[in-house]
Every structure is written in C-alpha cells, then in structure tokens.
Image 1 (cartoon, rainbow, N blue to C red):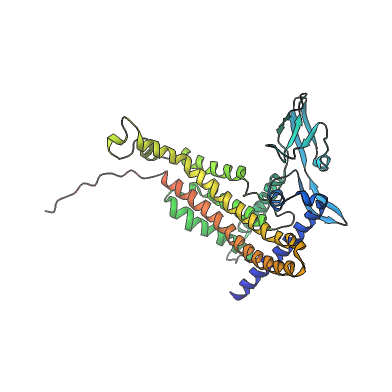
Image 2 (image 1 turned 45 degrees about the vertical axis):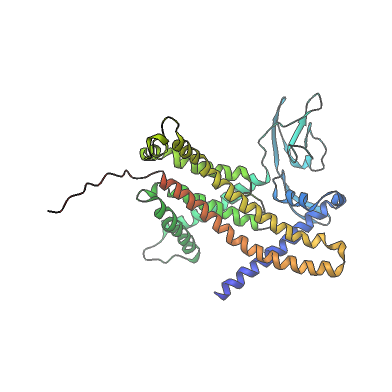
Length: 364
C-alpha cells in the first residue's frame, strides 16, 4: 500500500513538472503580447478548443500539430492547414476571430464587411483527442479480448488482462447489474463503453503533454452528446409502466385532471435527468483543469514581486498542484463512475415491473 501511494504521488509530481514546462513553453510564444493578456485569458486558451495542438517550443520555435480546417462558405468547400491561420492573417478570406461572439472560431467577412461564421466541420484539438482516446480504448479492450479468445486451457491471465477484467466486472456487478436488474445484459455494452470512454478521456486530459492535455470531457458539446445517449436509452427502451407513471401516475385524479400538474412535473424530469448528467461531468472536469492551471500560473504571476516572494509562491504552487493532480486522478474515476451509475439508475427506473394487487387470504 505504501509503495502504491509513493508511485501515485510521484506520478502527480511528474505531471506537475510537465504542466509547468508546457505552460512556460506556450507562454513564451506569446511573450510579445503578455502585457495585453490576463491569466484568465491564457487559462481559457489552454482549456479551450483550437485549430492546432501546441506541443512545446524548441530553440525558440513552436512545435505544434496543425490540423485541417474544413469550412463551407458561399463559394463552396475550402480545406487547408490551420498553419495558414496561425499568424492571424486572413487566408482565402478566412481568419480566426479575436473578439466577439465568434472569438477563437474561423470566420469570414461578407461584401458589407460583416463577420459571419461559415459551416465548420474542421478537425480541432478536441476532435483529434477524441479519436486518439477512442483508439486507445479499442486497443486496450481488443487486446484483452484477443487473449481470452486464444487462451489455452487452465491458463492464468497476465496483469494487464487481470486489470481490465477487474474494472469490467466491477462496473458490471456493482453498477449495471445492481441498478437495472434481470435484463441488465441488454444495456451493459453501452454503460461499459460510456464508463471507460469517460475514464480514459478524463485521465488523458490530466496528462499535460501530447497526446494528452485536451479538455474533452470539459467541453459541453461532448458531455451533451453523452447525456443525450443516456436519454435515448432511457426513453426509447422504457416500458409501458414507465410511460404510464409519467402521463397517468397513481395520484389523486384532481392532480391529473383538468390541469396535469403531476404529469407535467414527471415529463419535466425526463429533460432534467440528462441535463444533470451533462452539467455534473462538465463542471467537475472543467473546474479541475481550471484550478490546476491557476495554481501553475502562480509561478509566473509572482515573478515581478521579487525573488523571495516568487520562490515561496513557487513552492506553495507546486505543493498545491501535486495535491490537486492527485485529487484529479481520483476525480477522473469518480466522475466516470457517477455518470455510469446515474445512467444505470435512470435506465432501471424506466423499466419498472407492474405491481399487481396482492389478495389477502384470511386464515382458516
């Protein structure tokens, strides 16, 4: 147990060291405009989406993965590298907005000079991170499945396969089976996929160097899609008893006719459940990334306050950042667990069994 704790702490320290290095590298690229930027703007830039993926700075030159920009305007489709937009200059009439409601997005200007947003299906940083994390998940589970498919009789699985099996069985038995009931196997593929998809994306988001560091589960579009998938699973496969409890629940008639008070409340709950799933995951991951970056920036914000204050705040920043990294590793698992648990509970509630009246038999 002590060895695992030391490994856990050292992993957090390494993550903190790379976080400082990554922030320093990217901050040096914008040194010419550092006076115009605030810590909040730089943090927002780190945790936001972008059209390129900054990796590091080598000999004063930024090293980044420039992703394809794919947009459709009035004159048709345009596809080009985001490298052309890095300097802020327009390319083929397109540029990245620096302010306004389209800030950080590819925009164009019409003949009147008004800024508008073209149809944008570009491969952004978060989109690439989703592809990488999904590929990691496929490799992990297909490798474990391949071992089970080819295993000889009475063979003992290795540590990797045992770890995968332990995680799968813990989700299957502790969450899916206990929350849904007898037909739980029908929903196991989705719930297991959701759990490990969120877990891998959460963990990869904590790693501050490529291919980690993307704030995927802290993006509302991604958490919204996950919540909508649960909403579809709940309402599409809900039985007749579930819909009866929504539109004609077992309450006094005056609460249903002429004004459907209770049915309206129950139907409103159909929408609030996925909304709660979306916001819970988004807020926890987004807040964790923001706090870690804010603590890291204490090192840079106190440089002009003198060597003594800067040294003290650096130590303070490192200690708190290590603690927060340890906490974020725990939160990465907890948020995947909670999302899967609530999804399984909602699915279980959508399949209630019909309660028949029990006839009392008087003793002879």
